[in-house]
Length: 174
Image (cartoon, rainbow, N blue to C red; front, side, top):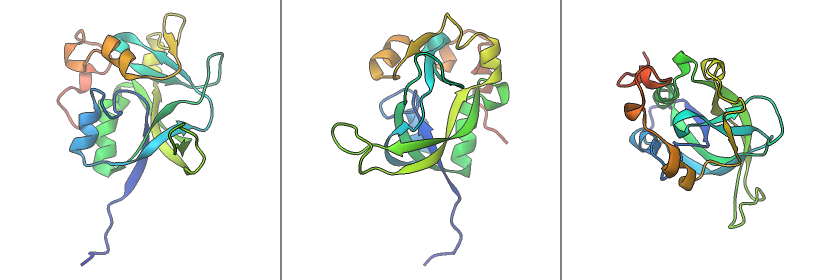
């Protein structure tokens, strides 16, 4: 029997450490997020690899911009709040924005047969930009794959004290 009350849901596009098989994916599993499919951004973005092997989408097209592969997930309000904490929204590490994505269907990854939608995504925030993310020292990458992740990612609890993103360790957003 239905109560008539549905929990609000949010579509979230993930392109980095939250993807299946990556370090922070456990958070999506713990919140019972629903996997909607592999996806691509519908417009080009520039992706860079920042300090500690952290991927960032940079606002504005530039040389090296391309559609970005990732995954589309559905989360509830509490799940979205937990993602905001992980991504350091309050610290300015990332900003949450709405962008256009399309799910991919088929072995070749073609968008044909998938669906287009909008989703929340986390892009480089003002404090990350202030600290130089996206400048010439940031490596441009076409995709954040498992090889890159395993070779470069440093979890928050292993980063230097005061590093961006570590202020939110062990807390939830109220």
